Image (cartoon, rainbow, N blue to C red; front, side, top):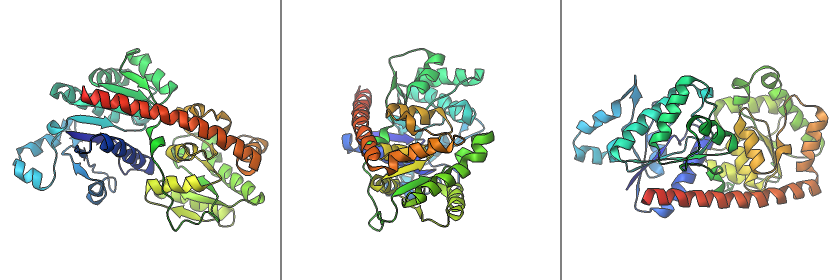
Length: 381
């Protein structure tokens, strides 16, 4: 059996964590399966050295001008393709989509249109198509609604990550047995703290996100960095040891450098391995952040994490964990931030919050395990 992991990868640490989570679950169930992924032409996203180390074969796949040029690889002799480990689209038995958040008017029509067109061809070929838990919508453009109807009709199983995404989907296609809800599936992955990480000097992670600048407007955009600076100063005033954790790329690093400089210089940690990032977060007393999977990694380990967000997926994540008070406004009053920081810095408050998060985490992990069992049944039908 050949299984394609789609739309996960190395574009950011959240995407790579989803790749690790999907591979972990599927390999444990199907140890003899061959796994493939479609490299992209974006610089640094899918270097061969990275996906080959994970046991992934490259799939010949390249959309351009509405044409799937990867199909032309089929003219190569089979022996030549096997020499270089190349998989053709027609050879794939199961497509598992782990996009996270791609199918929405917020990102334009490109991703949704590609999925709709690809799902039609997969249905004709008898390829199983499963969309793992992810955020969807909104879908307000007439064209996007048609595309959603198209990919839903040709998929075998679709999971919205939370209620709002489920509503965005079902408003377009209606309620269907194959459209379900399940939480973010990276909650089952165990983190591994790097041996060289000194948790005694880095206890509260500040995790910036450049999307809070380019995906928001007005006071939210302008006050985001000052908000993180204020939170960091308040932590320092309380005798805490905050540090900056870069979850993705140069954009986040630049924000981290601004914040560190503004508060007199605190450590900035960059880690390339998403499992180690999760491991670092697991050692923390708490976190203040805006990277979605950085928040999932903290909350799923019972670490109190305060958040700011730029889409509905953040608010719904905190509803899943019953921790709505952990969602903060960057333009809120100082007293609101101070009360929120109590849940990290006041021992009895932190212990109470951590115990609550651990209980909710176990319930959500049970839902993730149930989701995978449904996926396995769908694959085996």
